[in-house]
Image (cartoon, rainbow, N blue to C red; front, side, top):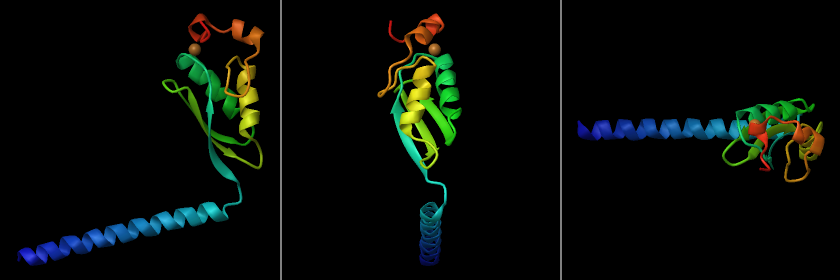
Length: 124
Ligand SMILES: [Cu+2]
């Protein structure tokens, strides 16, 4: 009896891992043949708080071709999913600098920075 149970559990484990492997390869095949050049990118952006997060993400999402934008308050890294044929990290970086946040590539507009709420003054 024990042997049968062992056999059954091994068999189901095999079935699960086979199914998982098939799922993964299908995903990568889809990514390879997909027409939009969707890519993940990361960009360092300076900021302080939740208001900064909202401002940074809004500016990034306003750039045509940006699908998702998520800024990590702790690490200061903006995670992006974008269409590489429509836009670029450089374009997103410029858009973010325009709303008052330094990025690893661009400096924020001083006037815009000075007008930010005090909680967002990351240079202090
Ligand atoms: Cu802020």
